[in-house]
Image (tube, rainbow, N blue to C red; front, side):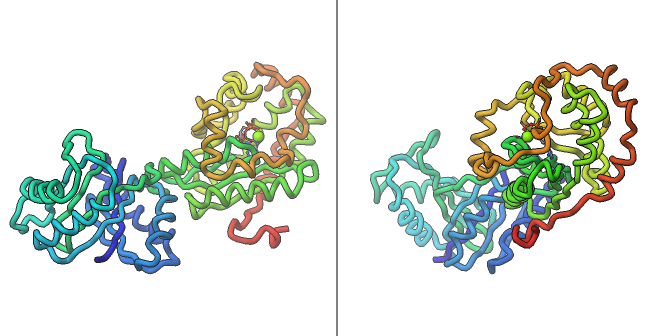
Length: 391
Ligand code: ATP
Ligand code: MG
């Protein structure tokens, strides 16, 4: 008997009018992700079936676990023989592999020409299992749900669902620009944004020689980890050295981080517009550090009207760390290379920056040409190339 993979859409089921569009994108993302495998897809409004080469099934399931928009992954047995005796026996064999004690049969008969209705099928199959195993029926809270889908293409039988990532298919909600540093937070912010169907481009500010090539490589590695979920991202690297040095030299040093971050946001907005990103995303979490008090966020946000998404704004650090471990970015993030934000950090950074003071200070130096230069010299890093080729 053939094994096929059945995909459950999950949250997509709430999208009435756009549903077809979401399913189409999900299918495209699946084809992208599984490009090295050979398989067929059959889909309809409720379900998608992947018909794999059986020896590649396990590997395909692992890949499907990395695709947003998939709520559940089911390995189903397909039988072309829709005779009720055959269906009963396939069901029984499948249930015999289980050690649980209670079950319920759920039949879907999308092929309405099939002569036995769903309720009757539930009873027939249920009775057969009761007679031949120690299982008991529990219709309210069964340990095992035995599903039987009777379709024109065949009958699909399964009793186990593997959780998918949920969320929306990447690219269904447009593109955003993630400010990606080498820290723990921004990769997690990126992951949670991709989960909502948003495709990401990545933006990294570096200050060589104050920051090292290792710090850049770390960001490349982090972007690659996110590419597992995102797939078509670009990493844009901004040379921030001159701006940072000039701020250090010309402006009030206790406000250094505020000025730096204002310049980062300005540049991020320009890059976002250039690459058709509809929002900027960062890893700020309220109160985590001095630059993330509400008044600091206000002072920095003041330079732009662009939407800034902060998926971590209310997260505790420990929760962020847990996600970073799940998505495999934690070990990279804790490598000890300095980020441009930490290089010139003042000993007592201001916690409640004052906008009036900021405007006064910023009058002391016109950064226009330095910002233009940084934007114009933005470098695109190919995330698919080997690190050694990038040096
Ligand atoms: P992270 O752990 O993500 O580095 P953090 O807690 O260290 O964050 P900050 O250094 O204040 O916090 O940075 C806040 C956010 O600003 C980061 O999450 C990131 O989105 C962005 N950011 C900071 N430094 C850079 C950088 N060098 N390049 C790109 N984005 C940056
Ligand atoms: Mg940081």
